[in-house]
Image 1 (tube, rainbow, N blue to C red):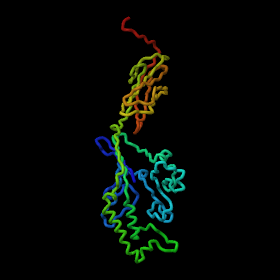
Image 2 (image 1 turned 30 degrees about the horizontal axis):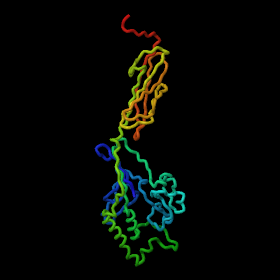
Image 3 (image 1 turned 90 degrees about the vertical axis):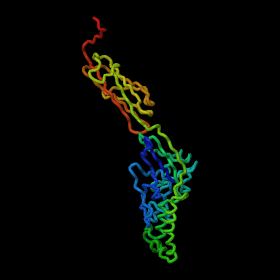
Length: 346
């Protein structure tokens, strides 16, 4: 059983796909397996493209291993004495404390992994996995498939019955060579069943019951994609002084800076922080802004002599994608001369 996930961008363009299935090869793409068809009819699966990936955590199965055969992954179920992987979703109300008595704990990479699922997942009977979503994704399709018999298993049966597999090495307890049964005249007549099983599966791989069964599916719109951006406008004593010299301020007089932050994206931004390259402490009324929302942050200081410039910078986090930021410079000129304001008449 596995989950197939496809992410789409604008105009329905496929951005990425997790666990793609190769229909011609009748298996998942990206598996670590050496495929063969003696008749050259069934091709090996195509390699994963740059937009495709295999995520083993979304392939739900029990994969045994065997110290008797020396295989981490084995289809010799009778000879298996441990599990390399077992991430089958526990049933609703599963009691992990009782699992060791039933040899039913999850397993991952050859080790028992009781913490593979959270307590909530055990109780609820589900598996929650986070998948990174590109910022330009506009939609997602999720499908759950089940397949009764895999190509890998049928190839294993074919080669084992034919005596050409080579998974059994060394000698038995009595010193017998592996695959000794194939040398017996009676079992020699059964070799044809290896090819027969393979050909039956290969010829019927696309009929209902043999082909992957779609168990469930869903699709979601991602609000037209995430277009994240933020804008900062800085003012000194109420003036937008992007260029020098800026307002004239008497040395020692108070200076106030206003930093207007606007969420210019189509999603809510969180973790908003405004800093100043001159070490000025900037205070903001909130740390999150909805799409299109603005706020004004503030800072204050005392005018010093000469030309002064400082740069304000805002950073913010969209729900997906990279941090967004913007900067704005402001100026003033600190003077020791008396500043007289008139209305134009003496």
